[in-house]
Amino acid sequence: MATIHLTASGFKEKVFDYETQAEWNYKGEAPAIIDFYADWCGPCKMIAPMLEELSDEYKGDLVIYKVDTEAEFELAGIFGIQSIPSLLFIPMEGQPLMQAGALPKSALKEIIRKHLIKAEQDQPAFTA
Image 1 (tube, helix red, strand yellow):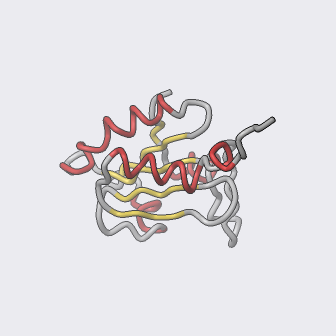
Image 2 (cartoon, helix red, strand yellow):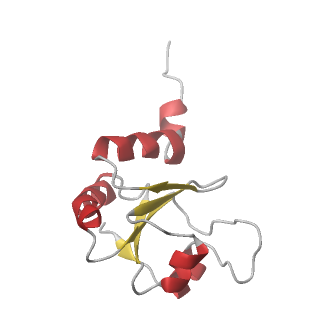
Image 3 (spheres, helix red, strand yellow):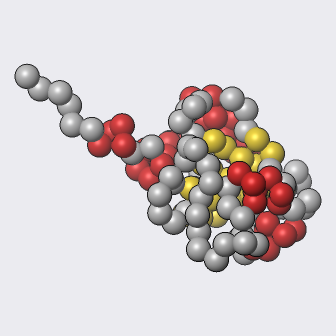
């Protein structure tokens, strides 16, 4: 599954409708990462292939969206994006976590494991 480009209207439909709700209420069916980027940004270009790989690795368990801050001023403003790339990590329950800067793949996988898809790792091993 490739990363999915997201507009403000798509964000309101698939992630959170900030115009009608005051409290965070994630609409998705799987945890998500939103990559706030710009085409001219070197670090954004550096992490883009990693995000595509992660999208394939976690297919069905995680959705990765991309928001072009040059085209989606409204979303960039709502989230106070001042540096790019900025990544918004959205668990199924609880508040999202924002991280600015390009992270290595190992750090991204650690955040995914600890904050987004932790249920599988938290299961105790079966012992007889």
